[in-house]
Image 1 (cartoon, rainbow, N blue to C red):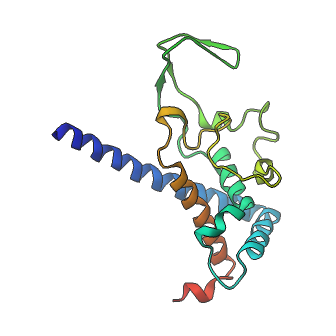
Image 2 (tube, rainbow, N blue to C red):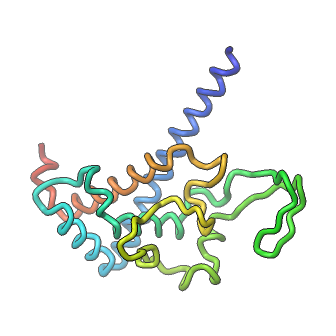
Image 3 (cartoon, rainbow, N blue to C red):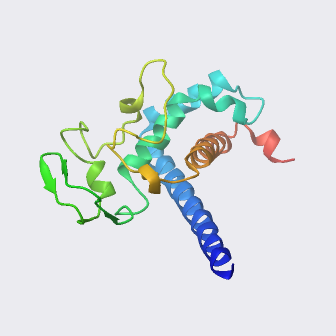
Length: 190
């Protein structure tokens, strides 16, 4: 009984610490990249004005229509991952990944920055370009299941709070931009 409680406390601590760092670091990088590229920042402000307006703060119900802001969050996760390596894994079967043979029982460490900078997958790998994640009118999903990035890991050991982290990241960036541009200043004073 004590052992089970101890594991649950450890899991909860990991969730709280990983969730806090990942979201806040991602948003700091997204804001820094957007401030260094006024065209991108202007597109974000225009999207906020069009979807939300200038008379209220972003609400959770607005998030599905904030596609460009989600693209900025996703691009920040690609270019500036919080952890350099994914959690170590051990292969359970012989596998071939990208023409490399990986025998059963191998210990695998995946480089998150390496995945986000593969020239065969990403064009102009060191440039912050949220447009690369826009798929026309389709929803922008922050979790990348085609394994081109590992912002939230994947598989059985993937992040159990992907939806919460995605929502927090998008909401925080949107409200930070609103506050930064003073559009929401009457609401922030209450």
